[in-house]
Length: 168
Image (cartoon, rainbow, N blue to C red; front, side, top):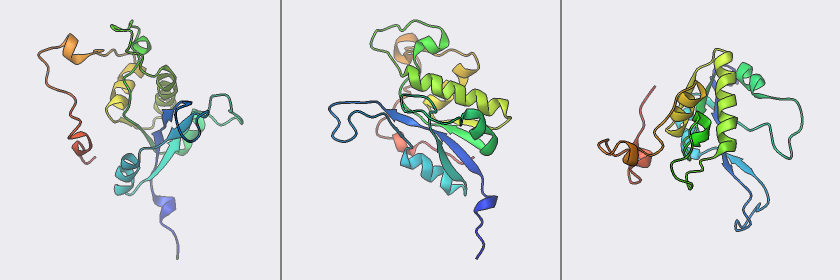
């Protein structure tokens, strides 16, 4: 029986990161890169194959595979949601010191967006991912909507977090 896999789209998904944490029970000294299950299931529900694109940099980096290789091989990219984009990534100073974001992930995903854009491949984002696409192309963000735009609608709803989706 022949597999239909060669005809399926291969969609890259940016990795989320857990950094070394001595309080973590397993792999406390390691950086973990992972794919959120619901994102993988969403991509598979459209008949595509999700492929996590790991960061090629770090203390254990080896080989010469880079983002351009993934951009040539894959059919598109989805950027995960996650922590806020660090204000320095769009040329601003954080309004509050505690708003660190994730500079490493910002750099990783900005490079990923640029590689896929240069290859002419589509790039989609989920929450943080949309913000990152904007920043990768020179845009800016409100650091804190309730502070900077108090009349705005509520943008976070922890209860309905996994209920916000639509077909493409």
